[in-house]
Length: 121
Image (cartoon, helix red, strand yellow):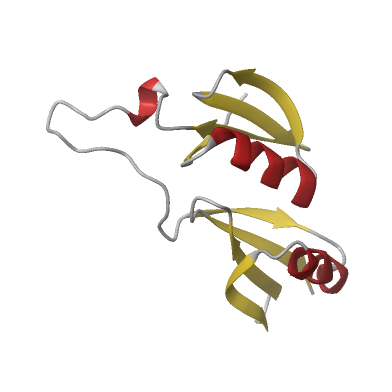
């Protein structure tokens, strides 16, 4: 099994976003520190400020949310997914656009992590 870890500012807020907006299933929650959600074969670890992974390194660097790395959720109806995302009030980082492999839309979770929704074609 493999997983992706996202640093989040608020674990409860992240759980609500991923389960309500993106249809992930809550697998486990470790108080306010961390939660694990899953959608299909993708397991996502949501690490809050109280998690061990978010503590400063020996060099003093503190891990944080955000950046351009992202998970990609493949959908077969990006247009209807976009309507649901807009209705939920999500922040759109990159509006819907089409390239040679298909169409994509990049949104932000409540902590500023990027999520790409992609439709082949």
